[in-house]
Each structure stands twice: as C-alpha cells, then as structure tokens.
Length: 95
Image 1 (cartoon, rainbow, N blue to C red):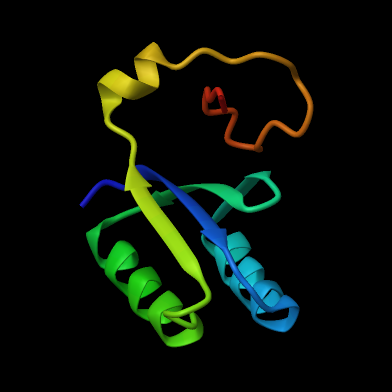
Image 2 (tube, rainbow, N blue to C red):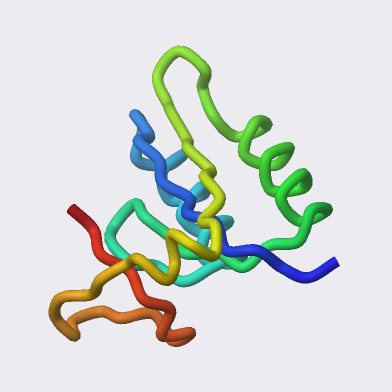
C-alpha cells in the first residue's frame, strides 16, 4: 500500500519521556516544528506508530495527535518562509 502523509504532534509532560517520543517521531518523519512532524506512513506503519506511542505516553499527562493529510488538503496548502523546511519539501503552512 502506498504511504500517505500524516502529521504527528504531541504535548509531553515529562522531559525524559519527551526525548523518547521525539526520537520515535524523528524515526518516522521529518520535524517541521519542535513537536510537529510530517510523516509518510502506510497503513501498517500508522498502526505500529500508534501502538509504540501508546506504550510510551502517560494518558493523564501527555497527548499525541496523528492526523492524515488528504490530497486535496495538500494541494490547498500554502507555504510561507524557507526556514526549517523538511527534506521531502512537502508544502505545509502552520497557522
């Protein structure tokens, strides 16, 4: 199955756990901002990433959001600035 683009964002309450989650996120995508990643994932990779994050997060203190980006949304996305653009050069605009 062809990979689909996803955004992964998180808010982690403890610094050590934050570092572990950041390493996992970097292994799956490109950092767009401090806690925001752009990931190209197929169906199996999404499930594996969710399962791995579930094992790392404290449900009372942390939050992670994995959201798909549809083709229409990618075409409608506008970019401003050049700083920190991911290597894949996918268009994005963080508001």
